[in-house]
Image (cartoon, rainbow, N blue to C red; front, side, top):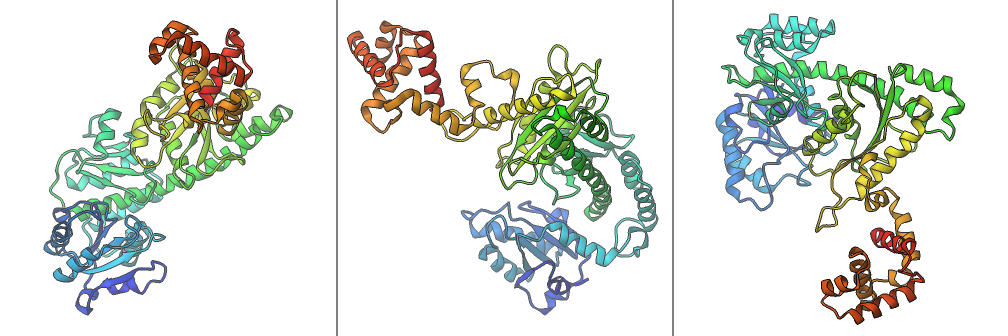
Length: 520
């Protein structure tokens, strides 16, 4: 396959930015996706290089682009395919560098995934794994035939990985999830703790199995020790693992459909009216014989399709629990819900809540896989019967609202957070679970004219009220904190009482105004 063949494929929508006939007729022997500043040592002659240009920034100097392209030229790359998504286009400085070094450069539009380009090249060259000619490929023909057979038989990932690297001298090798779960390992690879595995995912010796999957759903091929093998061979092994991964994703998609049916029943106005249907839906999801249930609801960005992947990946860490992940019919964009089932004796709902603890410990790692998309979640208390799942769903949604209302100190940005109902132990935490428009309306009506904080006088009175309530209604301590005379504090509080219609000698009125301040 030649570079110009890619340009003829309308399905890819590639655009030639620079390249003459000598460059466009070069033979493609493989594909490597990279965002390293100097990828030269990982490339083989004849490879097509895919880059999202994450390594480049508009403030960078021309030398940075020059070094990147020089590395491609030295390694013998045939062309650079540059993604438009990161910068809204391909920087002209990069095009000029490719022109100087004689490397064709094509732009990849936002709607075309790198996986589509990779599949196009390999399907065009390889066809089916078992029928590929041996010459152009790094994996021996007998190995490809064996791996093709194992894939068709639906073998387990441990066996697939072990056979894939057997001809490399059986080095220690792992397949790791985005958050450090060990999906597969060879017999020579010792067990890897989750925290170490999560760090290994970002190591230079780790290769993404499916770069176009969401950040939460990616698998990674990790070899902790260097091996003397062409990088292209590791890419071919990763492609085999990607085929296995796609089969598991199809199963997850089917399971999410069943979970969506279950959630729709739970969310009906009276789910108790159809216990038989609820029981059948739980059975279809493998949750019919659970002793207790939890509901968790997670919200990502409105246009983020990876939230279901994020929640599914997190719940895979709950090895003793049954789970059903899906979307509610009434869900907002980017919102996913799951029912978690536990059995007596697993330790998941006794003493320290293992479910909540495990997920909270995992949340920072999960969030780090897509740091630009805050991920919030809410967890219910245990539901002891299927009929109480409706209440658990309500709790999870309330806790989610509380999590999304938390703010990073000193900023207006929401803090990525997982909140359990058990965390709502203060008035402020409880109020965060109320929808923002309801909180705003309550604050306006409770504070009356003082709600208009554009008035400097009102801002002064609100500050005095806040400090007065914080100091338990102590005139002296309030005056000291504000550096005022006690008589001034008395005057201001009298004004607050007159404008709000509240008597701050009464506990219930104090609570009303404290809640109103927290709702602002």
